[in-house]
Figure (spheres, rainbow, N blue to C red):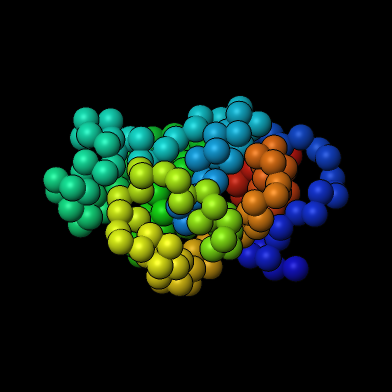
Length: 196
């Protein structure tokens, strides 16, 4: 099984993960669970949890939807690249990124150099069930949000597939089970996580 296909079935070595050597960067579509799983993973690893969207909002003193409305997506993407670079430079931890972050070649390159990208791979229906009742997603403020999500999904999956590791987010696993899957996938990367 290749690194990209690792998805943990629940079995395996039960050693405790130790020191974090590189930042773990959660990538994937909106609704894949990057923030929830990333926060729980950081707690498990006793590492800082970092969220690029939160950092952008704090720096701009505006929400992501407000930034999109006032300054547009290109401005947001520029700030996103700056924030991701800064967070990767400043400390090791678990970094949750926005759904579009991994599309930029510059982001993919710096994440690969200074961290490890983990794609939380959820299918379209799982994603739709998680985002359809929220109005906080500026890209889904369209006449047909499901069709928009479908188009984004098809456009973005080839980029996410370039992540270092893939973990399936099937909509059935609890957050704790998802953390177990991520930790298991990280066994293939001793350059990222030491084992005690």
